[in-house]
Length: 287
Image (tube, rainbow, N blue to C red; front, side, top):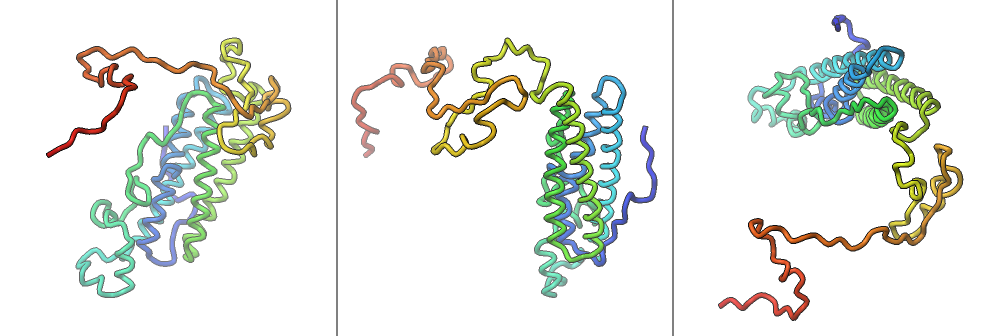
């Protein structure tokens, strides 16, 4: 069960309206790594945990906090849109400053959302549930969470550098700090699970069913061999169950594939044409 507290988790008030920055701020609200994504990602991961305990509680705590961040950003975007010229735009655009704002403003902020935030990114792509990951495997999911927080913090920092508004910077500073915590907490949870399960996901698949002769082999499939200089190419594997090896010139393990012809009703190119190794005269002359 959820309930709403009217106060914001942290203040979200700009110094002045800025419709152009409102558009940019939409990215960390409704983009792939925005607050809508992480909120629902953590909540669905938590709801999928079969049983209670500290991991489920951590997911529910963090997912619920991310809902608060959605509210903060939606409030900030609405305030940045205050006073946006939405009447006679042609007349308003005669003012060069207003014209510049109109040139970069998201028109849907005026037409669709009534000067409010939208579940969309900075170029208007609607948020999609395709962005969220909730597999039921906590180690795999926590690694996805770490990536989401890393990308989200990077975007928030870039937005912080892109504005001179002290009120916006103040709110972003809070979100950046929370992303620092969330990266640290997912790393801590990852390390704890790795100590229990080892590092390869899933840990439950029988090892005798995988081709162990290539489980710790790096194949050189690009020009140059600089990749051989990494920790991943030599010495004990990270999971402690193998030894890394580097193959400079890998050879194929399979043969040239041969597919059976499709049935006649498919009307593929006939095999006799495909396998023809005779003289090719090119296309016929057209008069």
